[in-house]
Length: 324
Image (cartoon, rainbow, N blue to C red; front, side, top):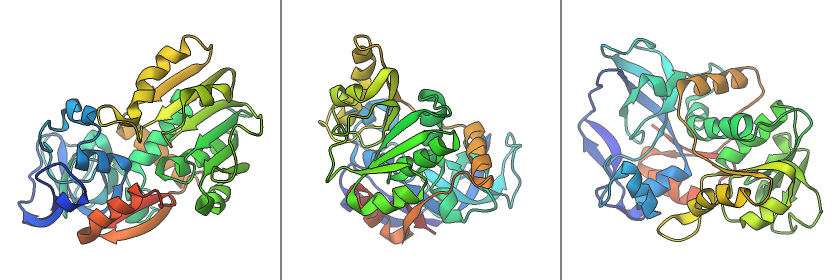
């Protein structure tokens, strides 16, 4: 048996319960991990609430969660290896993604894991898989950021944003970060060349244009962001917050390619892919000192509902993590 954060129905954080449940058994191609820490990202909230309804159509369960244990980012120690899993051995320290990381043990596919960078704590490693890889794919692949480009990052003080600022700088860009007042010092410390406090400054007021805009905040109109791009510039929409119950903020990602047809600019939504190759690429950047995860607050397992609520309120400077 093991302790885990479980839900039987969709809803607010009140539906989450700390329970004793059976320890999972790894299947072919999987390893069993003794969880040391688990990251909290916006996707945890979407899977907890089942909102927007589009999430349910993606196979996570129409009427109730298909996987009852919450959490997707994990860092821990390999406890058992089954036939078909060849990349890791018992005792290896790993990080990556899985279903159900808010638990003492979890099974994960080998191709969703990488070795934990030795320089990171388990908490820092758990903060990295989803947010770090999403930022990497946004900067390197979707945005194709290169040396000398001007890059605007909305939500620069959050989980994905804090990685994106560092990665864009590592790729040689001139970075402007947009965040709330309480995160200005953090974003500046991450290497941003300029920081805009959206509570006091209109991001369009300076008249500056950007080669690439990475939007992790999810609530500004496409028409506004398009006007901030140079001709043939690129807007990358990362995730989606706000909006209605059907599509939520993801509607902008659906509409963006159509809007791009009439603007000459590239407007695209990013659907991040969880691969061990990008986890390893991120780990290399971390080991080289180009990127460091930012952990704001660490909660014990029993307080995972409070961790989700804290993140959802927008107060987190970087990432929130659950420690086991």
